[in-house]
Length: 340
Image (cartoon, rainbow, N blue to C red; front, top):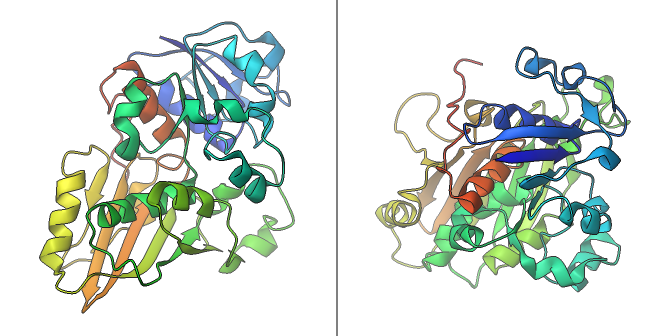
């Protein structure tokens, strides 16, 4: 199958290219970058030396393909959607443009009118674990936000199975690596300002909350903190279970929902230094590791993902595999490194 990547010079686009070059059913035809058009992709992604001889092209040079990945900044995919849909019958967009189903909710969180609101319901939200059957029939998939993914995946089985006390709040906080900010430098990413930081950059009002509410059907009180890490998210959520719920019930809940999922691992060990999920263990992988600890009725849930993989490129390739009928793990078998 022939695919192209629009916006391949960013971190998410680079991860897409890395994964797709190893995919047994895929040929990468073109990669775009207006900034680096005509330059070899290895100029920007040096890890791909001897993996590809592709050079970046401009969007205007794109040819038709079977599937188009779009990894552009927010608002650009919806603006150019007519052009992109003429190039491919199947589109997977990594931006936020088609994640939210309600155009009024989109306007509230992103501050602009949605110019393709009639298409919102044609895009399937990108968490395969929640929307696998819809993806099998879909032409369009919208990748889920990285912080949203790290929050939705560990909480969804608990809400789905009625484990959580609906009358009490759910509070979640994500510790986030610097690659979440993309590859464009800013004052906040300047090394003397970013290095060593533990910076609460979104204590309230993070845009990914809209996705959490849409997918979970619950209000989530979410905060995000920047920490000294390049890749990864560690999500810690505090919630309260219904009376009589035991740790065994939590285990059963996760196993019943995620027992056959190829990229979900329940991590709760009695001994060792990796008793709970740890972002560096999943770096470069498409895994979401989930752990928990129950104290009376208070449940603390922990998850770890690589924001560029399970939170972006890996999730998009997983969605493509389901959409196109490929083995779900195709191109995504990397198990991570230890030590790292």
